[in-house]
Amino acid sequence: MKKEAEMNAESDRKAKEKADKLNEADSMIFQTEKQLTEFGDKLSEGNKTAITAALEDLKKAYETKDIDTIQPALDKINEAWKNASEELYKAQAEGQTHQAQPQQEATGDQTQDVDFEEVK
Image (cartoon, rainbow, N blue to C red):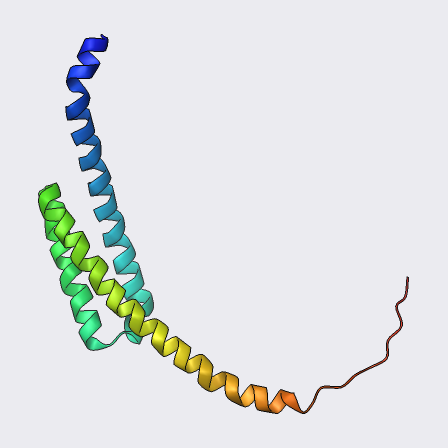
């Protein structure tokens, strides 16, 4: 029995690797569709187009169930999301900077020291 397990170890490893890669691709497809729905209006057309094209490539690769085609498609979609995320974070940081400046000026002069008594 031990010999049999050792003989099948390589095929088991390959089967596990394939299952893991298929799960990763399936998860990425689901997450991308969800995030496009959620953040699609905040993305530039260029990034949105790149993500959509990468998603279609990943779906086609997933249908083949071939790890050698799935991995490059995963890399492509991850790169597209990386670029889009940088854009989103930059826009968010600029928005927070513009919002924070007026608030700091307004609250800077209105602070007051007050006396208080601790009640037990």
